[in-house]
Amino acid sequence: MSDDVVQVYSPTAENAKSLAELLSCGYCTDISDVDVNADIYICSVKDSAQRQVWLALKKHFNESDVNLADKIVVHTAGALAMDGEDGLSNVFPNCGVVYPVQSFSKQRSVDLSHTPFLIEATIPSTLEKLRRLVATVSDRCYEATTRQRNALHPAAVFASNFANHMYAIAHRLMEKNGLPFDILIPLIQETAQKVMEVTPVAAQTGPAVRGDEAVMSKQEKGLNEDGNETELEIYRLVSQNIQKYRDEFQRKS
Image 1: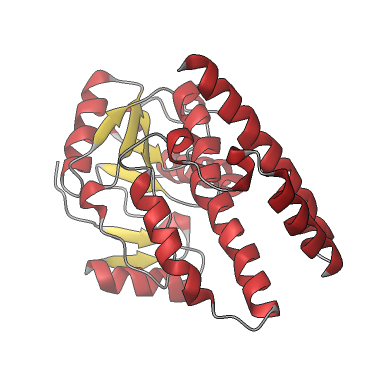
Image 2: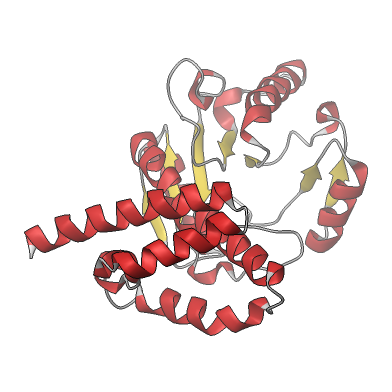
């Protein structure tokens, strides 16, 4: 099995060409033109489009007299099952999952060398091939079931997407009051560094974990006066949850 990328497919020519140039490979914009001689086919599209791509690829293979058992097809989604009625294994018998636990944006390059990858496969030999494939880009590979990925995915949303939205709220509050967001960068960096050394609950600071009702009341009043109704609701809900986690942590200590 070669590690070379043979071809890139995308229905958008610009996207296909751009990625193909980076990978020094060919590209196509129609699944019926996908090269049938590759070893592994990686479906990295939005979740709602995955099944459509699987079925179109299977149709192309069948029309090209390809033995489906000879081709490994994987998806990269954290929330999609491999098995079951709607799973990839219901379309391709030799399949798997290669899920990178990372956030990707076109405007930023990501160092994959320490990015965790979760893998799963229908066949042990395929699982080993996926393990070797991941090893070409990362030193962190874990075998995980669909159930485990389903548990990790919302955790990743809280840790990344929701945390970033909190930054967005903070950015708006700072901008609204004529302050640069850069002021908060050292605080954000220190908080991120801290959870690498102790548990998040142990690292928690602020008025909610201290139970400082006077400060919380003042902050809630400020948010309310500025017309930040949604932010006020989020502030109260998150503060209550911080206190709940604090109480559970203290009971266990």
